[in-house]
Structure formats: structure tokens, C-alpha cells
Image (cartoon, rainbow, N blue to C red):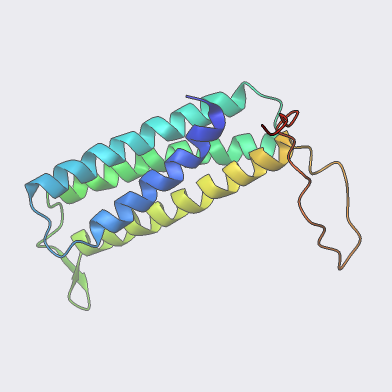
Length: 156
């Protein structure tokens, strides 16, 4: 898989996870699909980090990709804790259980992953297109550079 496809692919997988989590009843099939997509997020995060590490993209982009991979591992750990119902009977405060806290951290973590994945994908695109080389004047928002698709064949 090409790097740009993996960089944007993780965003779509996390979005599918959000949509899946919105289903009102989570039966065993939904939970299995959620776990499978979670594993796919880890794979994408690793592929993205490994792919970016092999480029000369700026270090900040590589560090964000690394932390996205690390967050994906944390997400899996939190997901496993939720799956085994850890803390579902332990009330912490205000009627909330430890399980509720873990779920909150799981959701916040997923928001961090999709945010960081989008930042990495955009930064990589800008680096690849050398958009950081040319500065613009304050207040200026130039149109995107034209895309060359090669020579245009003559019309029949």
C-alpha cells in the first residue's frame, strides 16, 4: 500500500469506528467488528510510522506518527479492559464507575488518534508538494497549484 493511502486510510477506519460505536445496540458481531477495526488502526498506525521514518519528512511529523502508533496500542489496552468489564462494579464518584472512566479515556484516545492522523497526513502532503518552501504574505490565501496530469491527448 502506498504511504499516502495508509496515511488517509487510518482516518477513514477511525471514522468507521466512531460510526460503529453510535449503533444503539452492540451485539457480539458489532463488538467483533469493533475489535477488528481497532486492530486495523494499530496496523495502519505502525505502517504510517514505519513509512514516514523511511522518508526525510520533518522530525515533528515522524514524532506525531510515532505517538499515534503508541496511542493505538493504549487504545487496544483500554478496549481489552472494557471488554472484560474491569471496574464495572467499582464506583469512583458521582455514581460513575471505573469502567465509565476507562470508556471515557478510550473515546478521548480515539479522538486524539483521528486528530493526529489527519495532521500527519496533511503535513506529509505539504512536505511532499514542497508547500513549506514558498511563503505567502500575511492576508494572502493563494489558490492551489495546478495539477499536471501530463500531456493532453488530442480530441477525436
